Image (cartoon, rainbow, N blue to C red; front, top):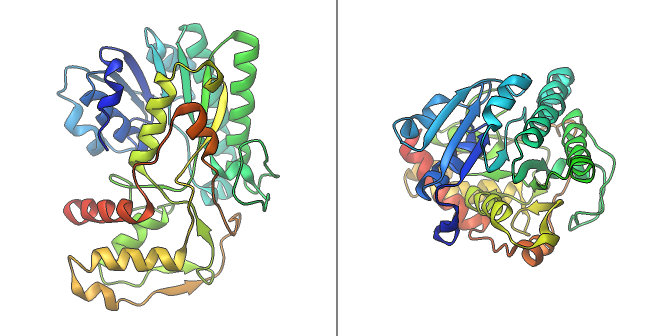
Length: 331
């Protein structure tokens, strides 16, 4: 996507927490292309130095290596910033089930530190990564922002608490916030390695090695897979919108379409086979359903369209095509 519509951000100062991660590093890259002065805060727990290596020599880029669980670090990072794009968190439902205490410390304690630091630094706007996991056991489709269910994992609880804290910081201290409920984001730089790798990069890595990926369940579960450029667009709209009604809200950040895991693997095979014909013959296996997983996820993006002017630039199909091409070049 061409992000030239956001040229007004030139010379603004933006802090990206978790800036060495998948989403954060993509935000840093686009902001630097827009001549924004970017500060990246990361402790490299899940982010990677190679994600930000191309930016290290950029005159508008600053790296602060530190942890959001340390308030002084947050204060230092927020000092003199115009906007905060808060991406730092411990993601993954399974990770939170295995270690709820650390997920809570980072995602709630660290989030509260960042809110306090942003408030004290008089940041203009605090935009944060919320999560579709907040919809919990609600079976309603599509997911609409003001109708949620009970959380199904410690991770989901932490992300919902973030939304509650953000609202309280607006009503109590006047800090303007926007929460973006990400729906299964994928694309360039998403890590295929580790115990908590997301499904798309994990399956791409398996297919490229001619190994069988394992689908949790029968493959009928569906997700609103969202390409990274759509997520970048939502973040930039959130810090540039002049619509007062758009502030202090949460928004689904998605495409508004759902894809089953069976359909997903077919798409991956289709685009990977263009690089390696043998991939089309790799068998897909099935395993048990995963704890904490919801069967179906589909977002309504009407609110984002109406209040932020959001228009997704990528569908699942052309997003997978671009992601696969990136992985083929970089894995």
